[in-house]
Image (cartoon, rainbow, N blue to C red; front, side, top):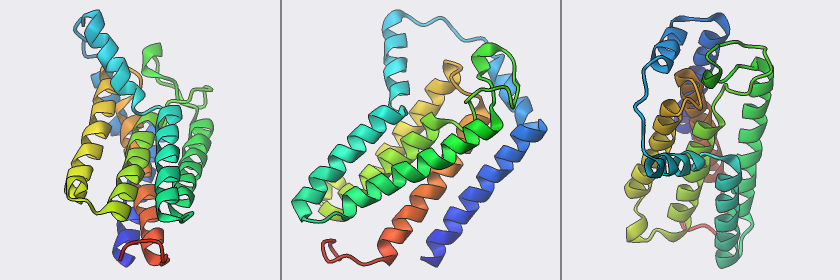
Length: 211
């Protein structure tokens, strides 16, 4: 529990540092501008379609729906409300923190070719990055925690979640959906909440869970 809390706190500190950079126009913002000014190659329609589908893996509606359905099925299989409670808790925590941050900072999108805060934008932190990491990460945790099947080995699940999350971030950068710091901040806050909720689940015992 202590180790998990330390990791969660470190990720939270990372989020606060990135937030400070965004608010004060720190050195990290120079990286944002440099990456946004890189000329993107023209991609064929089929590849653009694939990119949009990858980008959708970070959408709140999709990730929340998949997570809730999976949690309901696992809860029914093991006759416990715990999986559904964890899924709902993670979604509420994420949307509260990310939603409040977006409204408070109001950063504009890179597609506008101007970087402003308190301008009514919803760019920082990236909901795509935080949704991808927390929602797919929580789904992987529930599968691992309640099945322990060899095919769902923890390391394999971690690689899958990491691959999905990094793919979402890469596509978001390419399509100018978010600034680099948006994505970095989203990863930090998503990771912080994911580790914290898993730590809470491990700390509070449940008879329905495998030992």
